[in-house]
Image (cartoon, rainbow, N blue to C red; front, top):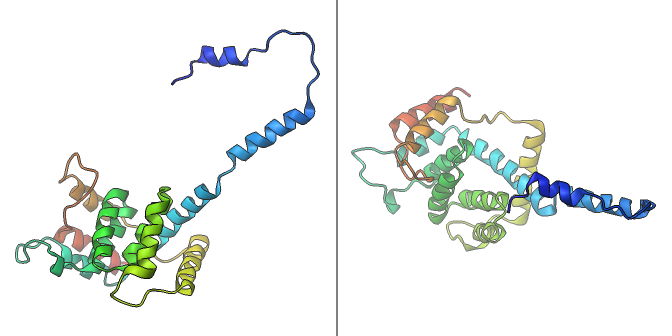
Length: 223
């Protein structure tokens, strides 16, 4: 319900009941309570850290020298036909998802991370853990953390020390900077072009194409 200015003024009006002494202690308690409400909660702080960490991981993935080669394997090509499960390049889906996240398409990134995680990518599961944590979806976040540490069978799960080291690395990069660059305007334009092919949808399910791959090759070569 929208509160009108008149209502606010009416509620703020002090009734005339004779002189009263101001209760300093009560006033301080009210100020302290108001300050505590304005202080970010642990959940908010954790979500912000997860979002920053996800950005670091995505830039790191996107700047890998072979990133464009992997995306090329899932790109549209008349000679390849549809992208089936046995033709899925897991790293290509991971890189494309990270590009989508960094160019402002989080729902699309989630879609492609899920494809990669479903094909066994622990890195994609970690990205999904951070993604859901950043938007306050704790249950989904810990589901993917469990997938990362327990449920995938392609390789031995990372131990706690590895994950802690990864988080320390992300924190260091966030504080001190990194050579891992964010996407260029050209890459953003290519992603927006793909998004325009599915108007009215918030998820880019279209595969990358040769034009986007070429732009990504220029990006990684120019580092």
